[in-house]
Length: 291
Length: 295
Image (cartoon, rainbow over all chains, first blue to last red; front, side, top):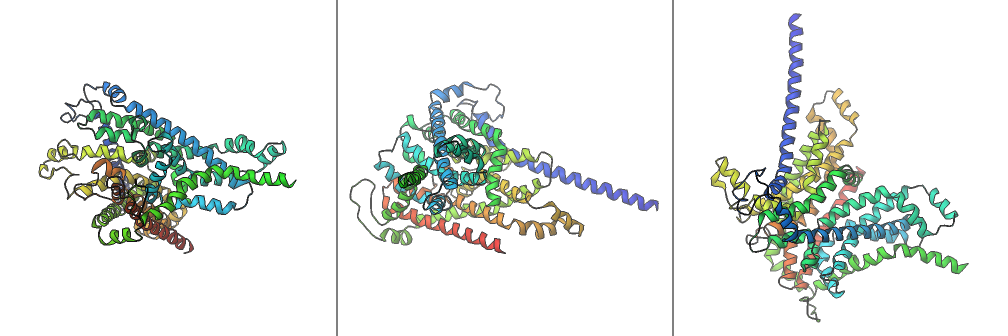
């Protein structure tokens, strides 16, 4: 009898040890992977605070004499300030453009009646499903050339607005479809035209969907490189990603300044991501799991 | 009254007009134009373009081993991403699916690399892999494996795998997030019921988790294929296609053909072939997920 109780206790503690040790192993592994994710970024940051002379020999992750002036240098002498402002400009204009154009179209597809509504909607959305952007890069370049939009801000902005439309229209139409119609009806009775209903009622109501759309477009435009490489050749017009490639292609790469440029490029994205990570992760997974 | 109605009707088109204008100019026109250019020998400058019909395609299929090598390279990266990256993503998702402490912290960290640009990620790893100053070589020497040190991305034996590692480092968090969301949509009662019936973890995984996750697996696989075949930014920020042609991918070939040798017609033909291959992959996806839904 006594022995049975004893062995039972032993079993319980064995179970417990097994559970705790497996949980410790799980966390150790997850922490290891996390460090693998964070280390390269921290390494870039630490290196941005060293000098060209010490950066290859000094492997410290917390430089003893941090050279913060590298950032001032990168911002002014290495033109990253210029690139940063350009990126900021492109991102804002594209995001606003996508929201305006996509919400107008989505509002029409959801609320207004016109001939060919569903067919037009499907055709517009199909660009989202078919990976044709890659193949169309060449004629897009030719077109921009014909329109004299090569090496202009507009030439970099317009194709990117177009790039965000399919997802935007789809997202906002789905959102408008789920909204009750009563609000608009009462507005219409009060004599509001279509434009005022769109602007004063539909848009403010769609704020959550617009936020998701904005986040995805901000990330896409901020990280865009291919179009910037094709379209922009003057430094004054370049966004950060293009600027980074130009800087690293120079004869002697100033590594601390390059790393400072990388930090300048990454910091807004990381901050935005940390602030809005719940929405971002929800946005990605919602589409995928319903998919 | 009629006029009023007509105005009303036309007014509705005003709402979709901007979107349509964008679509026709920047999506439809290039899409059609690429087919037209693909049967010419246009150099991108001269006002005349000679029609060569299918000569570009014939050359591409018969006499362009570099293009098919670039296809093969992209395929190798894709295969690694499908197996190594996605298994890693699934494994991590399974670990985080059990309500562990700090699960959200891990999730935020794992999804950090995917929100960075390919250029930034490539430039950072470029340096880690560097032959003279790279961290990887420092580390290998430190633990006594100094023999292995090399210029990882300029060595033809390691360049492609090196680039693939960067791509997978950037991408696994994305797969992880989607797979985790899939796992969490499985009703917990199913697991409990199976447990009551005495099923062990492996049986539960095999008989409940896997079958319910198949649509998510398919989605992740197809998006991995499409995303990886079109890899470009990481390549351009690290190897630029070298050494030799060892890390050339279709996108670098198409752009080199267009920008460096001014063969706009030929590059368009490459774009068409590549586009068709990607399209087939997408169609297979749509078919596969439809079939799965019917089952």
